[in-house]
Length: 200
Image 1 (cartoon, one colour):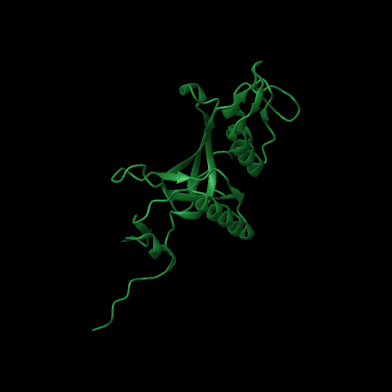
Image 2 (cartoon, helix red, strand yellow):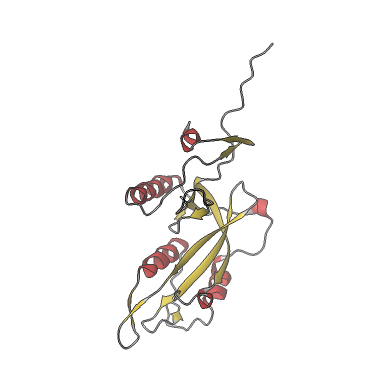
């Protein structure tokens, strides 16, 4: 009788550094009192039938006149915009405008018009970017571990995989990215327990 060995390699990786395509932008800031900015970016992940979401959300710091003075969400937003080539942003009054100073009435519509390709079949999507996708460690033991997509993306070239991995390693070291352990790793239809098995 022949020895049975499961097929190794060539599986679909749903976590870690993955190739993605932008799918849709939605402005949700009006739904939350605390959010001056809430851009919800739907993405397609290569080899997955499910979409994922990148959320860029937070409040802005303002002076006594109501002018913007800062807010960590701005760095996240502009880092993402730079990656996709978007030159739009906020003026000090908190109004959206493009790089020519023209007012943008709806930032989601603007981003969809400029950065989402015409509708094409999923199998013809161009996965122009790299993103880090992970299971976030729950705040309480026993709670569900949600899938998250880190907001900093890169253009999809081989050299940027190392750059993104360096970013992720640094953020893990600082406790910014907290990954769940002992989660199922999907590959070739098999389910393997334990995060360490993913790299074997």
